[in-house]
Length: 209
Image 1: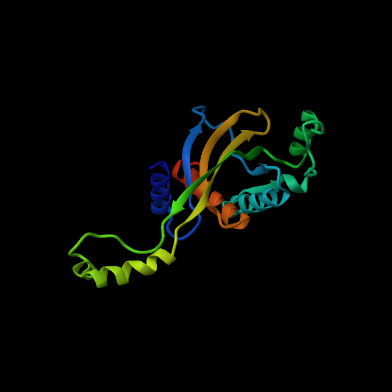
Image 2: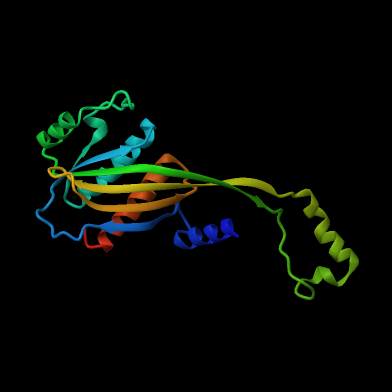
């Protein structure tokens, strides 16, 4: 039931492409102290290709809204580990030198996989809706070929992301968005779907025009 409900939800949300749903949104209740012009975009994921794709799409969306975007992949090498983290002061000083007044981060917080069974083809409805129920041969002749079209198992993947925006000077959190993307067809497809959902949410919340 859990899988069926999720499938129905995402199908209704987006029938033609990879669906991303915003699941939670928070923003500070403090009045805006300034207008932001340049945003540093950092995708905190362990795949260089995914990182580049997300940062490219988010940066393009920011620039389409009149903001300047600086991608983290263009500033810092993508080889950081727990033992090889940049110094906080060095990083923040670099962002400020680049004129960044806001920091946008997106992180994969969880990936959930769930297997489900897809039955073989063939509709079901009781007699007399379908004529093949009216005789033995009609029934047998219809359903017998279905035995050679067996069902199969497939795996649904849901990616849960967290998006935060910080003030580059004070490091204060300005807003946070949680989202879920269901069964993306590709990295590119995922990045487009994620970015579209975030832009839509921020516009609805009055944070983008």
